[in-house]
Image (tube, rainbow, N blue to C red; front, side):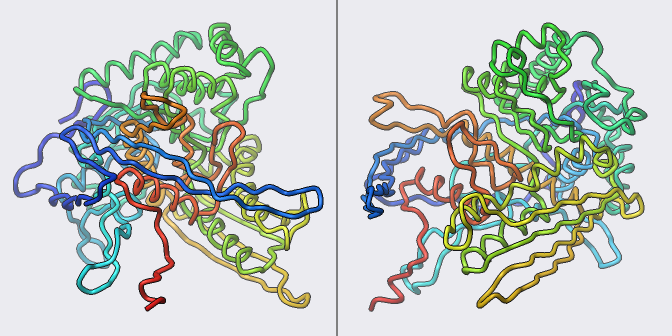
Length: 532
C-alpha cells in the first residue's frame, strides 16, 4: 500500500511472508532497577575521576561519583522516516531493503539464493554482552535491539523529498545497487512511490545536478520552509504516526559562510530565511522545519548544515539534531586503525587517502566546493586519538593527512578506497600499512540511516534525573552526540570534546543503554578468570 504523500506504509504481511519474530527481551534482577507497565527506571552511579595539576607539576587524581536516575518509556511508537534525497541511491536502496525484509523476500544471484537481511546495522545485526552464564562461566550475548524497547525496522513508514521526480522504482533502477532479480520483484511495490518536491539552490550543489532538478518547491525561502513543515505534518497525520525522524541523504552542499547577524543566532537565522538570504542552505531550511515541527533532524552529508543559529534553535525547542556525514567505509577503518597504532605506542606520520567512485555522490563531489565539504569531514577524524598521546605528539603536532576523491563513472556505486599509513616505530624505523578497500557505497550507508533513525527515536524516550534537575526528568542535550558512531564529523554540544575513536563511540552507546537497565559499564577485566 502506498500513502498519498510520497510514503510507503507498513501493512501487515501475509502469514506466509511474515517477518521473523523479534528476539525475546530480558529483565535485570537488581534492587536499583524497576519495571512498570509504562517505564523502566534505574538508579545509576556514574564514576569518573578529576585530575588536578599543581604548579610544581605534580598530578592528583580524585575519584568522583554522580547519581543519575534514568527513565525509559517502554511504549514503542509508530515511526515515520522522511528522507531528504529519497530518490537517491541511499534512499531507494533503504526503501527497497525495508520492503524486502518486511516481506521475507529471496532472490537469485550468481552465488545462489539470497535472503533479505539487515547486515551492517548495529541495532539489528550486532550483539552486546550482558554477563556470564551462571552454569558455564561463558560470556552471554544478547541482540543489541533487545536491551531496550526499540522500533522494529519492518514497521517504519518511509517517505520524503527529492529534486528528481523519478518514482522509487525508477530511482532503484537508476542507482544500479541491488541485484536485478530483487529489483524485478520490487518494481510494482515501489513504482507508486513518488518523492515530494524538494528545495534546490543551484549555488549550493554542483552544476551537474541541474538536469535532475525537475521536482521543486517554488517560492521564497520562507514559503519553502512553511511547505516543508506542512509536508511533515501531513505525512505524520495521514500515516497515523507517533514520531517522525527527518534525515538528509541528499547531495553534499558547499559550506555556508558564518555571518554575524545572519546565521549566528536562532533569531537571526529565522530573520535571514524571511529575507531570503543567500547563505541559508537547503539543508538548514529542512533542519529548521524539522525542529519547528518537533521532529529530530540528522544530517548525513558533510556540509555545515548546523550553523550556530540552527543549533540554538534546536536547543530552544529541545529537539534532537545529529550529524555530520555517514561513516561507512574508509573513515570507519581509519578511526579503528589510528586508534590501534597510537595506543600501541606507534606514531603515525602521514595518512594518505584516495577514493574514486561513479555514483551521483561522486559526480556531485567532482565540483571543488562540494569536495571541500567532504575533505573537511574526512580530515579531522584522527585528531582526538593523536591528542590523547603526548608522549608521541607535541602540542599542535599532527600527522600529515591528505584526502583525494575522484569521479569515475565506470565503477558506479562500488567505491574504491586506497589508504597508506606511514608510521615511526622503534629506534627511528618506519612502518607502512597500505589498504585497498572495495565496497558498495549505498549498501554500507543504508544500514547507517536505519540505525541513526532508530537510535534517535529511542533517545526521545529516555530521560534522566540528577540533583541538578531536582524532581523533574530531563532529556539528553539536543545535540545528540551519541550518534557519532555512525558519523564522520560528529556534531557535539558547544564546549564538549569530539570523540572519533570508533571503539569509544560504540562503548558510549552500549554503556548508556546498560545504565538505563541498571547495569554497570562493560568491563573486560574478567577477574573471575584471573583471580581464583
